[in-house]
Structures are given as C-alpha cells and as structure tokens.
Length: 399
Image (cartoon, rainbow, N blue to C red):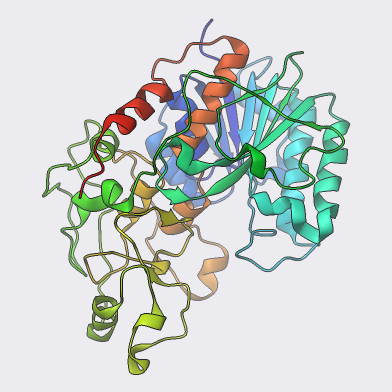
C-alpha cells in the first residue's frame, strides 16, 4: 500500500513526527502553538505543512482542507502534560488539563482510522483517578476501540529512565498492536478499566536486553569546555549509538556550552559522579537540589526542560542542547531553532530549545510505536526499528 497519511497536533519540535517518518509514514500536516517549536519543526520537516494554531480554534474540517485530503489515516499528538506531571503543581482546573479533551474533540470531528495520544503515566493518579475516568468517558463516545500501555523508553535504545503512556484508538475493526515492552506487569492500577483494553504485541523485535549508557550517547561530544561552541566533530564516534545518530551529517548543530562563572565551574568540578549539592562543601552548596552529575556508565534520568539539572560527567558544565538531543534520540542532522535560554516572564510564553527537547517524545520510542501500527495496517516500513536494535545489541559497551 502507499505510505499512510499522518497529521500531528501538539506537534512541538517534532519528536513524534520524526519517529513516524522514520517508520515510513507521510506527515501531511502539523499544528503547534509556540513559534519557536514551529521554527524547529519547519526546518526539519520541509515537506510537511506546518501551521501555528491554538488547538481550541482548530477543527477537523480545517485539517482536511489544509492537507487536501478526504480522510486522514492517522492522527497523532501529545497534549502538554505539565498540568499533571510529577514535576509540576497539580490543579484540577489547570487549562492545560483540558487540552486532552480538545484532542479528543478533533478525533471526533476528523474520524481518522487510528489515533495515537501520548502522555505521562501520572495521568492515572491525578485527583484520585477522576481525571482518567473523565478521559475514558469521553473516549467511550467516539465509537473507537481503545488500547493503552505504559512504555519504557529504554526498551527502544533511549538512554534514559523515561516512561510514557500511549493510547491508541482504532475504528478499523481489529485490535491495536504495540511494540513489545518489558514492563507489562507494571501497568498502573486503573489503566485497563471500562473501555480500555490490553494491546496485542508484534514480535518482529524484542525489547533491548541492555541499557544504552550516557557515555555511549554523548562521549564523542565531551571535548567542549564551558563557554565554547563548535559546529564540527573533533572526535570520531566510539559507539554504535553515536554512529547511528550522526547519520551522514557533516555539521554539528546546537553544540554550545554555557559560559559559567568561576565559582560554578569549581562547584561542578568538585561534584561527585551521580551526586549533586550533597557532595559539595557547605560553602559551595546552592538551593538547587535537582542538579546531578551524569553517571557515564548508566542511563540518564528523564530529560526535562532544564539542562541545569544535568552536569557533564567529565566537563564542569551543564550539557548542551545537542547532548540533550542525543539523549532524546534526535539525529544530529536535527537542528533546534529559537533562543537557547530565557528568563523572567518570558518563560511563560517562549519555548526555548531545552523546552522543545524536554517536551518531545524520543523519536526512537515514537518509531517503535509507529511500527506497531504498521503491523496493524500491513504496511512494511523501509527502515525497521528491529534492524536498529540489532545493531545496538551486537555493539560493545564502550569504556
């Protein structure tokens, strides 16, 4: 069959789109509110119509008109999760919480054959489960079979402790198929209730047998000192992971280190691997308790929008945008636009590069989900995730 058509809403910098694109899908159109994220998406997906739009003003008819289609095969999207993330304050009337309902409204208007909704696992416990119940009740009215799973990103060669909820709805009369996952027994209580079913799994590949480490992901970029930047690779790749993410790229994007003060450099130099303030002398400690020095031979914590949380394991600096992108599995050819940082009230309206990355779905994880859908619709992707995982399984864990 020809390449299935996809529309991405809440597209952000394009993590979901990149994964689906790698699985062979044709991304017709993408919708996003923040200008900076739109700039990044447009730069990296030149063949996709990208439109700035408030989701509350978007309609299914507009999407069909923009994409010049009578029907869209697949709708994907990850509504912002800050309203119920474990990292943020939780308020039942947080306007960001209503965005999932807006997503489901678009599903009802557009009637795609399949929809994919990504979010945080903390959704189930929000307000003692009342919000999840509200979502399920809405999905019941859509005439879709609903399937869900919480996937561990590390199963698909993402070097971080990241878990994400994926909901797949289908009106094609066949069960949804997910990539195989290792944490099936850890499904949150209350996930499979009412209208939500357990997914089938395809068997083309198995989850990663070992974790990709931080050193495997970013070691070739560790030449950069504080306050320096480089658009060239100064070191050969020393892991299979680095070779894959470099692809055929000859220019190094977004590799610029913050110019720290002498005191900050001293703090970061003395900080112990895997630790933060608690490993420093009293006179060098600060109030920032989330900062930790990366452990080179382990995975990373979930990448957030704050690079200040992550100190390089061999350089006295926070990690660069490019290093964040590596940990998120964005290829090196993927260039992030917009400001690198901002402060004050601008934080409320801007979407700086680290925010774009922290909000994104890792493309490797997105590709794994997309390939489950290819199994549903009998579409054979050109670049299979199974081949990529086989390369990582066979590669050495470099010292």
